Amino acid sequence: MTPRTLMSRRAWGQHVLAGAAAAGLPGWAAPALAAAASPVPEVSRILVGFGAGGAIDVLARLLADRIAPQLGPSHRIVVDNRAGANGQIAAHALLSAPADGSTYLITPLITPVLSQLVFQKPGYDPAVDFVPVGLIAHFQFALAVPASHPARSLGEFIGWRKAHPAQANFGSPAAGSLPHFFGLLLGRAAGVDLVHVPYKGAPGLFTDLVGGRLSSAVETTSGLLPLHREGKVRILATFTERRTPETPDVPSIVEAGYPQAKGSGWFSLWARKGTPPAAVEAVNRALNSALADPALRTRLAELALEPDPRSPQQLEQLRLADLARWRPVIEASGFKAD
Image (cartoon, rainbow, N blue to C red):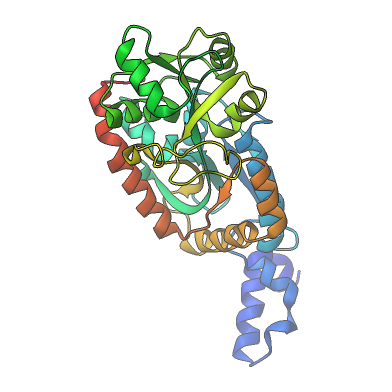
């Protein structure tokens, strides 16, 4: 057998590239070997903690198609749905995956931020067990009331709440979700007590909001927007600094007078601690390049997502900032998921 048949493809690529460099040969002399020497395995996967067809699943598949070719001509990324427990099943799958650069987790900030605040025993510590790869995109939230509600603005809603304390509540799609805590944050900023009514998903929440069985609800702007446009609910404010392109007729929370409550959700990519830094850097470069593509940015805008490519270090800074931001809100609520 020849030496080449005894070596793995990657080892052979590294061997020949090293020899070429030593001999002073140009890099184009063996282009196929560059892919073989990639720090990311040819077949890798992105874990998704939610079911197929949702926004984060669609996002994962869009990114997989665009990142894979940048990692090598034969590279392939598989999207692996591990739905359940508000993303915790996928987080634990990452924790048990090999730290060889083959496995990544796409997640909203429930895993890197909220899990440490709402679960008594999440089973992992993002600061210890995971490493940041890159920020992907932000998504926004809004407060809406039924179309029959007398309040036409957020100020009027707060005034109505003070006059009708027994009726003042807000629904969210899940206890311990970001909409839950945005509602509490607004109540804290406005100096009123908004009673939380949790649901098991958005469908039941929307049914009761439209039917007037809830006085208000907090959910993603993209989820509420169709009902707002149909005149079934009225979005009073988005939890943003400025009005959004999707809702130019709706004031931002800052414009409405409650800048303390502004914020957003975000999707990001993570790897297991111990993943080779070269693999993390390669995936971050490929991710940021994909997010700069005009066609992808247009597609993400259709999903009400705002791309925000950053370095792994900047993602970690964002995680720490949101951890400090949400900790007092959640601790004051006394909420625990288990």
